Amino acid sequence: MSFIPQNIPEGAIRFNTDSSKMEVWNGQKWMQVAVSSPNLNGGARGLTVGGFDGSNRIDTVEFITITSAGNAADFGDLTGNAGRNGSCASNVRALRGGGYTGSSNVDVIDEHEFASTGNFNDFGDLTLARGQIGSLSNATRGVWAGGNPETDRIDFVTIAASGNAIDFGNLSAAKQSPCGCANPTRGLWMGGEITPNNVNTIDSITIASTGDAQDFGDLTANSRLGTGFSNSIRGFKATGDGQSGKIDFLTIATLGHAINFGSLSQSRDEGGGMASSIRGVIAGGYTPSYVNTMDYIAIPTQGNAVDFGDLSAVRAFLGDGATSNAHGGL
Image (cartoon, rainbow, N blue to C red; front, side, top):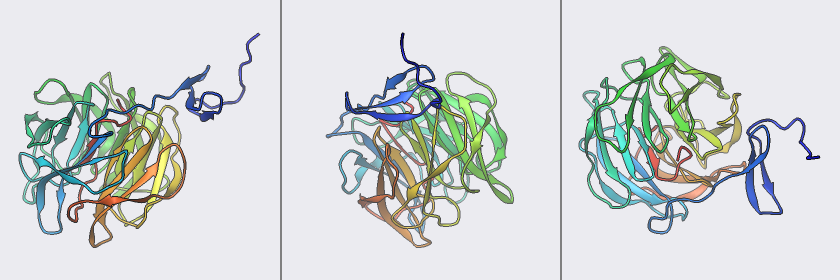
């Protein structure tokens, strides 16, 4: 007779000392967690996309190798300046959607492949021009939600096929500045602003379908303009309105509230988040002084972030304007 463990919550994680592998409980059995990442110049590649340098919105894209700490290097340029955009990716192609130029919101979607550096190219348009937009993706779809002007609209594209975004459904409420994360099945948008208040709500969608978002749970505090990132098991919200250094995390497969993971090396807002299966990197932000700091965390553990390296210059207004080719949606 097989032994069925009792009272194990779906989404629980363990380290199997026999196999030396991380495993997740799917409700019926322990499943091994894949920890491989695309190998580009030695490891998974993360991009910071656009932002604000303290004076102007910029078109700069920089890259890091997430698996090895070090400073960022130039990747190329966007098709135009954009802060507070929403970036997402497959393991082949990175997309940037929307953003604010300093004078107007844009509906632009542009793209570039991770494997080679260079300037981004036109992909298509969002259904609505907006900045302060949340983004997430799996291997097939890129999805954007919310934004300024305040909206509940959710758009999506097929990442491999250039073209304009189409309607996916609606958030639980019109909001700006949510931040996104995903596993291959489920996407989450965390926090945001419903004028004049910041909120702690977390909305959930099934990425492969279309339809309206459903309630998932709550963050530990009201927050907007945070950055979201994930591996396939855990989702994270770091930075956010109020120069808080706190990092929240949750198990994406299991409905519920976020809990505290640890803290950044310094309290700051509006950095950008990138992830591999085992490491999350938070880049830039303001304290309120603008910084080029990059921190990283070990995703399977809990604890405070430590130094990763530096961006080439101070940068903020990233929010969801960073992505990788090894995030949790892939």
